[in-house]
Amino acid sequence: MGMSLLKINQPVLLCNNQNHPINLFICLAAIDNENHLRALASLTKILSNKEKLNGLLDAKTENDILNIIKGEDE
Image (cartoon, rainbow, N blue to C red; front, top):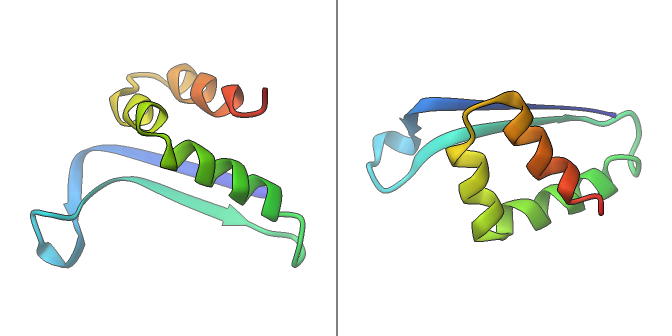
């Protein structure tokens, strides 16, 4: 299973709508029908936690992002 995350400083507007700026793009590469589910569940927990989501959006370095993601494993 692979995962990539792209954080951009200048948001892309979904449907050219100011109410839907996108700063994070996440791709999952599943190797079967089940292996990715745990990663998807962890990702959902991170993104539904306002503090962690804001941490990702405010992150300045790759290490900042990795620390937030790795913290979910604990």
